[in-house]
Image 1 (cartoon, rainbow, N blue to C red):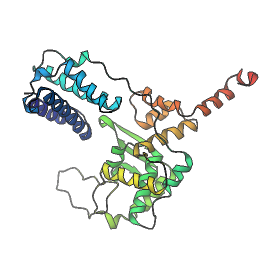
Image 2 (cartoon, one colour):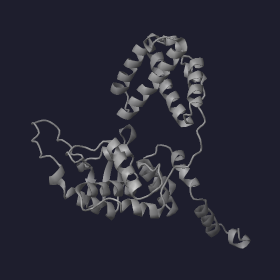
Image 3 (cartoon, rainbow, N blue to C red):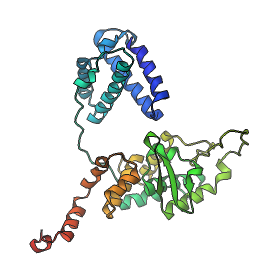
Image 4 (cartoon, rainbow, N blue to C red):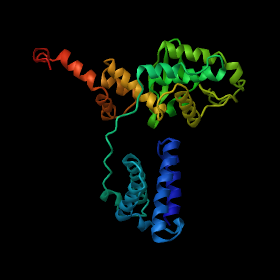
Length: 314
């Protein structure tokens, strides 16, 4: 049955595809939701859904149900992507003869602009942590590094002490697909991390000698108060707590700090391709969203740069 193949599919993703654990979990959830939808339609248990029920009609009905329930087009597109990967796996395994997802068009995504903070809001956010406490000094380092380098949440949570060069103000980042890149950060972020690392004796467990022949154990950069690595969920909660404390509008997440980093660079005149490299975007089109954020600045650039703009007083 299709449920058994879905379990094998998830195992395949874990072992054979260079996917993050978060992506594997998301694909597992998406395929499970499809199975539950079809099972409800057929009035059977999800474990009784046959592989033949993964067809274009069922997929369209599933996407239509997601739309009725108010899910965004981006969320529907992600679920379709998971089903496409699942269908290709089934064709490769000989369970299906054809890929039914080829007959299903992807929902057009909304052209929404990324949320970002203004300069005054960023200043208020960075000033929010209580620097008289160990947790506050750590939180300040987290916020400073987010804004200084435009890291993804998963990249910051996965950063190790060995990835940081404080004197050179550089951090090695392992991004999507295991790709590494070197990113600069500023003096403010470096000073915040120095203050945090001065608390190392209060947070970090004593080093354990490694057995001979084993690779050296890496040390998490950001720790909880028990001395273990902060999770993405914990970092997200920390950021949102300080957003609330700074009286900033709701909905600002760690990802919004990444957008703020890119937006402020663009407003200051940074090259779009340089921003692409800093963010680790595979496609320039992903970075180009930021060109729509500041029409006033683009108009001013036009007025200053175009030979006829000054004459016509556009």
